[in-house]
Image (cartoon, rainbow, N blue to C red; front, top):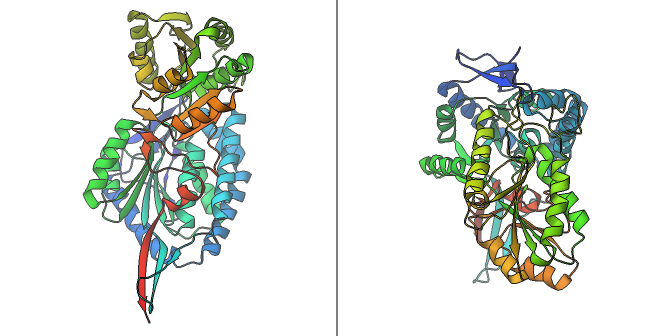
Amino acid sequence: MRTERNYVNGQFVASESDTFIVVKNPATEAPFARVHAVTANEAIAAVDVAAAAQKAWRKLPSTERAAYLHKLADALTARAPEIGAALAQESGKSVEDASNEAVYAAQITRYHAEWARRIEGEVIPSDTPDENLFLQREPIGVVACLIPFNYPVYTLLRKVAPALITGNTVVVRPSNNTPVSAFEIAKAVEDAGFPPGVINILTMDHATAEALCTHPAVGMITLTGSVNAGRKVLDYCKANIARPSLELGGKTPAIIEPDADLDRAAADLVAAKTAHCGQRCTAIERIYVHDSVHDRFVALLKEKMAAVQIGDRAVDPSRMGPLVSASARMQIHGMVERAIAAGATLETGGVIPEGAGFFYPATLLTGVRQDMEIVQEETFGPILPVLRYSTIDEAITLANDHQFGLASVLYTENYRNAMKVANAIESGELYVNRTPADPYQGYHAGWKRSGLGGDDGKHGMLEFTQTRLVVMKY
């Protein structure tokens, strides 16, 4: 079993803690690594280091900060096989998918590096003739980055790259389920030659994470996680009025109109839902199908869902991999059982398989109601509940009748209905005739309980800045 050390102030350091986080392969349940869980004092010291480093980092011209990010992108690309190998073991992804995630992380790093000359302020007219108003963009300081388990390599750089280009330094807490890939990223940070203290990566328990996030020098906390985790972060932010940026739960609705290409829509939805065993914030979570094509479309979904095979993707990449943990599987299975007890029909799946690994089959439910838990709560697994509707207005009402508003999907060839949905859907994203993919030049931001602030694009980059108004009399 490999032992990983935390990365602080430009070095891999031993911890005074004797507590280890053991990392298991979710496809085999075999432990393959352990990492020190740092103490509260060590987490606090890491913030102090980042705060000291930020004073010099913010003074560098943004083009010099961009040069470091380009070097980091080069290093991530070069180390993609090593990062991917670690990620595959700790997540259950195939080595190819995991290595590609490192390549995508390099791409978003380059994208944010290119904002170097585009972090713009404003000149605002004054009410008096001998005065100018200048609005400047400035860094916030130290950013605490809390990373999820599902896409931990990409999400880490999705947060770190915009934080760095705008002049902040970071303390990263990776998920305790997938920390090993983060320390492979730390090796790429070393390769890129970053000044000590600019990027720090530490694993810890929840109590220590609170000590990290409530440190007075932390000016912003960015999280991708559950709604409950978001509530905790908001509590942390209260301590020092730190800025939150939260990408939280999702319950993506897909609306299938009668003029849609049903074969294509079914293939797309099943492929998107079974990718990484449904553990994606924007994964399709409920499908609304027009009455006139309901039975046909359900038959297509059932055929394609039943054909999905589960297994260790290190052995066979064509299979659907495992969930992250035994507790996640039991939670999902409980939701399916309660839906059936409440009147839903199980079309396929819905049984915990025997053997090692946290696998769960692709599961299709029909006859569900809007008020059921399976429709109202995020499953974060390979579960598809299907509901009927009669008109596009009814479909919009049902899709909007929800606590979440992250992404949404529509399949139709009718541009009038597409525009109607685009103007009425209550979500941060709408994908027409395709499934969600979070283009990094866009803006990934949820409505309602799906979050505050957002990631990606110009607006995601500006999340990591604050403004200063200079009023100059002359």
